[in-house]
Length: 227
Image (tube, rainbow, N blue to C red; front, side):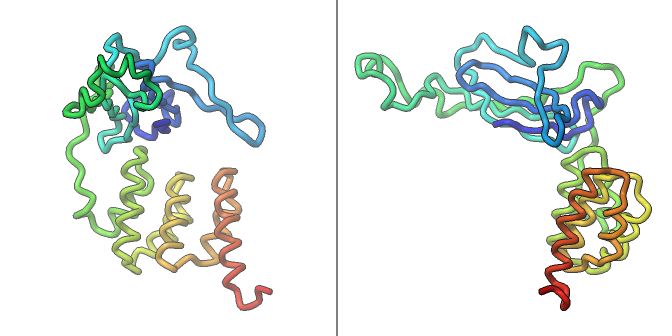
């Protein structure tokens, strides 16, 4: 259940941190991700060197997954079962004292909210009713859920009028993430043009240039001059 946090409720220090559930240890483990040459490395935060992000004394707690939420927080899925071992791994003399289905009518979802003053839960989001222009603008949203949902809806609608708006975003936006999403949406619309790829190939952001190379290869493969 390792999940990268892409919300905006906890501040920059938490963005792109990974959260992992330990179903056997009743805990949530957090790591901060740092560049390590051409790769990445994960380390415990400075204030979590000798403890976990969250832990429970309730032996039924089984954190198995997470979800980035529209309000910018992280949701935690707790399967909540007494026994998680496979029946084959439990000796018969112990198994006869256990109800292996104990807890199959339970389960909990937690929303982790910041305790800092000034945070308020974001109002209900209805991107399904947003216009094409509004969805394109949402590709620059600081919350990853909003960006992903806007990109998905643009792809599902297949509204070709989005293409010039996306091309403008690529030329004018200051957000590398917005440009990355815009490239993907243009590709999904079958409207990826050479100008947009060339713009992102020259972008100051190295990660965006890396993604632009992938799209450049697609254009080359589709070119009539391609071998």
